[in-house]
Length: 464
Image (cartoon, rainbow, N blue to C red):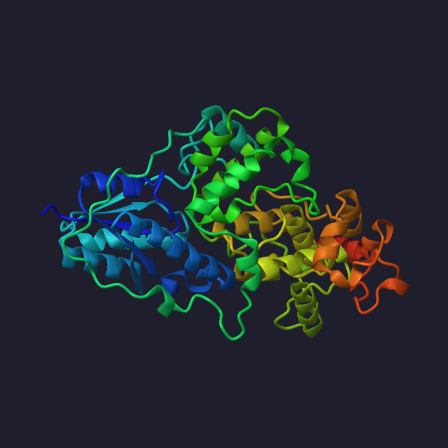
């Protein structure tokens, strides 16, 4: 019998437009393998909400493969060692995988190549982004650091490659390696089971991703305006499906590229933003952990040493800041594992500028709570808000939560996630009168005072 070919799965949990699977299926029998390598990722191991999504996504892919008389081999531990051992055990000719750009995965790819030696080949493919990092460069041959020229250059290279259909056949090996049981991984919370909101809010898996794309494509024309309105939520909600590779960005692009209007143009640039984030972490591997711009240390209050800052951080995490739009977002995050994009920016800005708590504390919370937590996107977005990024908003531009809430008509959104304010009128709900707050907390700090405090801290950090 022909030698088998291993497909190393990570954030590429789909059958269609999966270049590694496609190549392996053409080459011979296929052994799909997913290794949960928490130790390698360290502090960036999958957070709680991400593990819930992963459990259901792996279950969905397992069922799809089962319908094709195949399966997933699940293992927990060091990915290069486990994959090399499976290759040796099965006599695999090669290991096929889609490239990943998180620093721990790039390290793992190098280690796996060394571990295989001449016994088997590691074959890497591009497939999780519109174009691989480094494909779009400046006139001088350097990678772009700033989004706007990067985006312009990307658009000149679009559309992306043609997509791949599911393999016609996925042949099985003569003998399957042993596999862990998905349930034994305990990815789902039990005591207590806090994931009910995630289950209610999401459908998970490749089929669900395509269903969501089909549903939302009918309203993409209104996206430019609707994406900013949390009460009507015109966002695509494709981000977790894209993050976990249940659908590829090239598939999304080709499905929508014929649409007319500003809505599609705006969404296309957000797909390009995903590519931009990967280009940033490919250049600066620690970008999700360290500020690109130095000199902000004196701005931040440290929750580890400052009890008042620790209390403020907990209030923000719990959605008890006294600012309804911020609290609605933080409670939506906890309940559903996701937050509306406009509100993500407002809540993040509130933490780093109103509360003067460093962006990494917020990034860690988002990392644990988001089903679409992404090393590149999280780092780039938080550093953009904080003013510390290679391409970022100026720190002195401070979002006004009350104004943002009214401007983007967030009343019904607040009523859903801050029900203690549901009785208030549209005129009152964005900035509740003191006598009508009931048990809802007072504002932690007034906007004007927070703005002055932030600007003073910034000037002091600059020695002004």
